[in-house]
Length: 433
Image 1: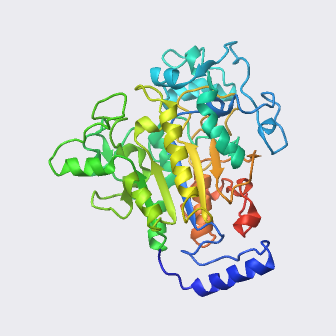
Image 2: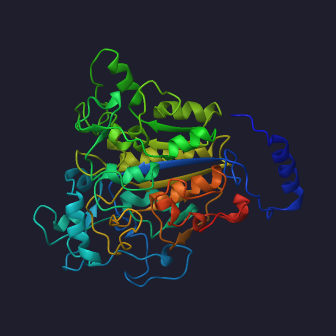
Image 3: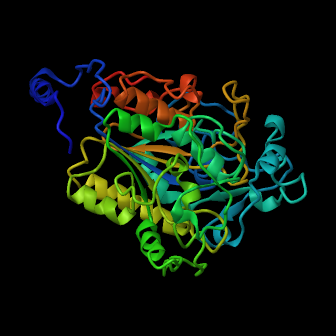
């Protein structure tokens, strides 16, 4: 862990905290130094599920009731018994998840949302509407329900733009619209075996560069990266992961650079400081060399992405194992874990998205879950504050980049921060909402 000039000050503060109580509020710190006791942030991004998909059977408030309370399942809305067209949901489980991948291009998602009517998911545009798009998980989602009970759940967290994964992922890095759907892959040597060969390098400001300039350690941990790097030495493609149901050397069985937003800004194959495999994540946790900010992406078949035989249980197993690994480590007391999904995948959700963003004139997509876990998360709490991927960027700017938000001149200038999910006494600072 890097040395900090303020180490002596921090030690003195810690001594005071032990005798002065936990209500002391940390003041703004210079860039590179956390503004709170949150010294590490781990963001885990899964794929293509709406809030109703996973929490429609967990929440118990009637659909449309807009509960004002904040503690427990009674304070978030259940999925409706029927969608606006009269269809009841199918059960979302391992089998139904792996059987089909709903169309989730922007044109389809906009037709499904239908200006906020939310009535185009089961009946509507050909190739987009399907009764199976209304799907609600029971037992399959319970590992996430358990995390929500011990942490905080956001029930107004939306995918930042209607459409496919890569365009939404870019908001984690740039906080604004960059390209449509999955139009481009990063011009990164490790994508040469991917399905998308339309590569592009972007030069606009991004979170990774800002963190590097401020001296804040950060890394992407992408499963399958080591195997792909090794295969490149023999000018070949990586073998599919043995446990991947599809069994082919393509997504979701091998590393896919299109899921890594930070790779679009001129990243090099040789950059092992910022681009690592998930096997290095376990080693970094054990060796106490975890960066301040970690972005975690499992292989596609562990992200719960519908279709390809992908199971929900493979994803929940991977996520809960990582959470348990962190909670059993030296990082347990200073790490915030955020678990979210890149976008809704074309599945139904009953809550209309916010109005089109005035920052980039892009329409919001459906609700997706966000779960905050760890000692800084409120317990069994439901936040109703409207949030999106750029809210996480805003928190990182606030916590590590001198408490100055909006530095990317994107949605980080206008979206809410994540303070509504956090125990501010535990954080030792008034993290903004």
